[in-house]
Length: 203
Image (cartoon, rainbow, N blue to C red; front, side, top):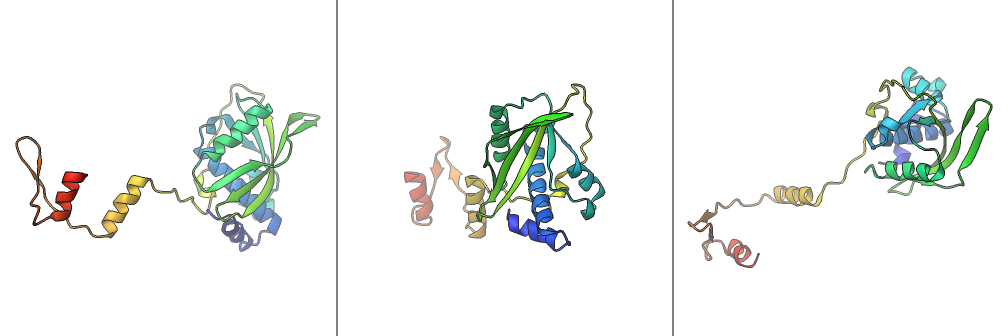
């Protein structure tokens, strides 16, 4: 996934550069949350939710507000939260780049986390998360942000077995039917199939 490509797609839709950068970070983080083991412990609020519901670029926000549900807000927990998001295999790494700040507003207490997102091309976008604790234990949420918000879906790297299978198919391998004797030993004609014979003998 290329952060610049995602941001440029929003700029082409007439988003301002900073709004496009924020929207890119929001989409990537929302995608990571939806794919992580903590998806049930996070609730999104504020301008991000309004903008995604309305899909109105005039409501674009540079703030990213979220609450933890039944999850600690201490620094170790926040670091664990970021580590969990980084386990999502999408080619984007999130780093905390400044000390975590306390937020002590009149009706809100939480933490501000300054982060940067880095893709495999070393494109970097910096943003901030304001994290609080949801006060209600019994909470019903609706899943209103889905993977469709991420325009550029991550390409998951194939496993080694998938790579080997793909290479074999692309090389149009010759299919040879092997026979076995009553002892389940492979019977191979050394003169007719020397490569298969060598594989059968030497592995």
